[in-house]
Structure formats: C-alpha cells, structure tokens
Length: 600
Ligand code: ASP
Ligand code: MG
Image (cartoon, rainbow, N blue to C red; front, side, top):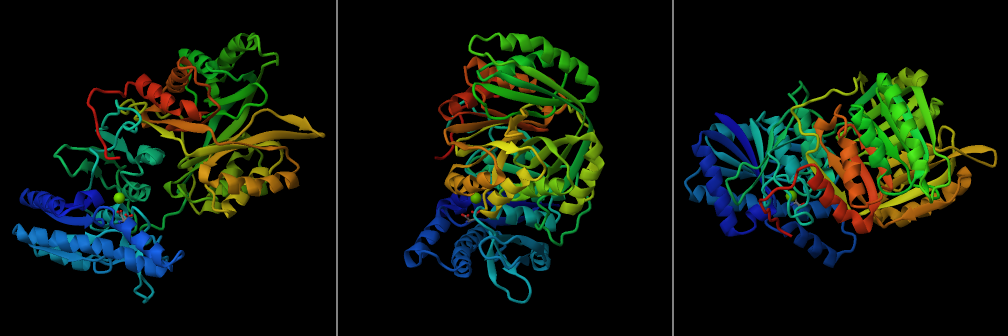
C-alpha cells in the first residue's frame, strides 16, 4: 500500500462544491489502494480576509495574535473536508498542526519546522482513516505550545514536510493551474505544460513557479528525495512531476532549519576571456557567442555589467583547454565590433589562465539577504580579490586567482559550516532539455555603483549595508574594466533589487559611496529581467548564443548578463520585457498549440 500526501490549495477548497469534489478524489485515491494524508489551505481568500479584519482593528497587530487568527482559516477547511469524507462513507479525522506534532521555531508568522512527531497521525492511518491536516500551522516547542504559522503560502511546506516525516511515496500538490508551465501564459499564450522539471530548475525558476509551489517546499522535497506532482484539482490530467535527486540519509530533526548555503564548490579548470569596450547595441553578445558555439566551445560563466558611455564589457569563462580557441574567436571578431561607426573606443581582449571559480549554492538564500555579503566578507578578510561575480536565485559564483582557490574554499566552507566539495565543470546530461522554462521579472530595478576602488572588502561593505536593511539583491555583476580615478584603480559594481526596495537602497548607498570614495550611484527602474533555466544547458555549447540571438533579432539590447550553471539571465529595457519573453520562449521551441488558461 502506497502512502500519498495530497495538498489542496485555497481555490481547490474554495466552496462547498469544491470541498465535495476534493472528498471524491480522496475517496478514489483510497479505493485505488492507498493510504492518504490530506493537507489543506484555508478556503479561497480566507487568509487575506482575516488579515484585513485584523488591520481594521490594529495597524500593527501582535504577531502572536495574528497567528492565533490566521490559523483558524485552515481549521475551517479541515473540519469541512473531514465531514465531506465521512458523508461519502470514508472514515476520516481532522487534525491541527499541533495535533500531528508539527513542531516549529517560536517565531510567530514565519516559523520554520523543526521536527514532526507523527505518531498519532500514523495510528489513525493504521485504523484505515484518511487524516486531514491543517496546513500552514504548527506549534512551538520548549513547553510553550504556542500556535505558530509558517508564513504565507506555507501549506505547501506543511505537506512536503509531512511527506518527508512519513516517508510517503509521493506528495501531490493540487492547485488551480494544470501544473508548471514553460512561462507565464498571461504574457505568452503559447506557454505549455511541462511534464517534468527538476527541483534545482524549479528553484532557479522561483519567480516563475513560486505562485504554484513554494520554494521552501521544493527545498524540502530535494533534501529528502520526495517526488512532487503539481496538478489541477479540476481535472484528471497528470500535471507536472517535480523530480528530486535520490534521497540521502538525513535526519528529520531540524527538518527545515537548513543552512542558507548547503554547498561550496571549486572548479579550478577555468580560464577567463574578457572583451572590453565592445559597442552597447543589440547583437554584440549574440555575435560573440555564436562564433564561440560554432567552435563547439562550451562557455560557463558569462557576465556583462552595465554600460559605461556607449560601450560594454563582456567576460566569460571556459575550461582551460578551450582557452586558445575561445581567445582566437574573440580576437577574430573584435575588429568587426570596433568598426561600428558610432564606436570610437578601442576594444581590448584580456585573457586570464590562472583563475578558479568558486561557488556557494543553497535554496535557503532565496529571500534571505546577507548571503552574498557574507561570501564577499569572508574573501575580503582573507585578502582574496574577486575578479568576477555572477549571481542567480540560489547561487553566487566568483572568479578568483587560482593560487587563492584552496584557501578560499576552506574559508567559505568554514564560514557557512559545510563540508566542501569539488565539482568538475561541464557534466553534460543529454537526457535533459537545455531550456526548460523562461521567466520574466518586471519588478526589479538596477543599481550601479560607479568607480568603486578595486580592493578587497568593497563588495562586502556594499552588500552588508543592503542586507542590514533586509534588502535582497540579485544579479550582482562586477565590471571587468579597470579605470584609474585619482591614482586608484576602480571598477563598477552593478546589481538588481526589488523595485520596492529601490528608495531604501539608494538612501543607504549614497552616503556609503561617499565614504568608500567611489563615484555616482546610478539607478534605473525601467528594466526587466528575462531568464532561461534548464539542467541540460550544462556542458552544451550554443545555448547562451541562441538566447542572445533571439534578443538581437528582435532588436532588444542586453543591459546586463549573469549566469549560474543552469540559468542565464539578461536585463533588458522594461518596455521590451514581454516581447523578450515571447521571442526567447519561441526560440527554444517551447511554444505550443494548446491554450492554457489560468485564473487571474
Ligand atoms: N492560507 C495560507 C495563505 O493563504 C497558507 C496557504 O494557503 O498555503 O498564505
Ligand atoms: Mg498556496
């Protein structure tokens, strides 16, 4: 007999009819020979309604009382669903988070799960009952028995954590969309359903998939090897399978208190090529990477910082044996780039053979500011200079000098409390598609600190100051060009933040820039970020080229580029964001015929 955890979101239990339909599906699953645990959210928009009620009483209600209030939403739906099951002849019992032993931190409104003690739950399952559990809530330990909630969208987390604790065979997430889609169908009508996606891809697509599946839940699934299925509660379509790597033995204590960073990696087999002062116009990156792909050279990191005057720097890394070829391509196309009539500056090519790439990775860094600052601080304190920085949702990669690599990796492993691992670059997996999905983020703004003195510790100070204001940063890129300002070599550091954080960030950075002796703080809120994600792009030449080419053909200028191993992101002008999303989605053959409608 298989054990299945099914989670139903708010719209799936939004009305009495929907609750009855859920009960039917649960009964069917039992008839098929499975033991079933059901986790439910509050009905429809109940949680929002409760939040608004509280606001009418107090502009700043106590978090404890908010938890007391919000946890009632789920209690309504578990009781009603249990009744519906019993009405259909199925033995069932509803239980609160506390009753199934979901023990959390004593952090109201954002508690993480420490441990689950499912003895009572298991006993009811043995009695042949369906157990209906309230999602989103738990109880604090340390003898206080306070009701806690896990943060908005937390019932996904409850479901997957229960599946881990019960060693369930599968966890099904029922929602109001058919599964995970290749992009946002409200922007691109040709978006298609994915049959499968890996947990790592899902995490890099957090901005695309977060509404369907909470990243915290994906992280637990990945850590405990739980297969997730995301599917519609309105149909019997199979939905999308979210694939987890094979489970590793792992304690269930501290279940969710994972470290923000859970992997440190060193790749010493890297060399860098930088093209300085290439023209800032559509098609330049496309041309460069098309020629490189034509030589079957796989590029790893690619970065392009924001332009200076009317030119850009583009830098990339390749495996050391491919350096000669890559450099030859760069040399060959540089004159063509230089000959552009509006472009008077000289392009320059820099090659660095003695570099290494170090990276830290972890799903826990999503929405947790300060991780990038910590890596930069750790390297700065050890006097390690960072040559390239590229960040994504769940990864920060830095290129440093080869001679510093071993020391750097040891210090980072120590700082983040993990055992280090060494990865080989370019592990190609032909089974996986190069691009699984395309995402657009229209809520980011770009900030550039000009002429930051090029010495260890600058990035650390900048990102610590932002983290202190609880501001998450994304796409951090350090320019390649070194400028001498008043006898000091300087570089630009550019990154993106949420538009909502822009004013605060500016307020912190203006005075900081002064004290660091750097130049202006330039901001631009009229940007959009387009990303492609796919585990199959690792070790496969030409994927970046195809991405840049699609943008070039639509005359869209790339303002910034950052990559991680399974993701490439470009900042483009905001007005062209949706068009960029469409052309890139199309270019990778993701567009299909079936119209997919999703609720607004
Ligand atoms: N009811 C909670 C919320 O609306 C938890 C959930 O639905 O996942 O955030
Ligand atoms: Mg939800």
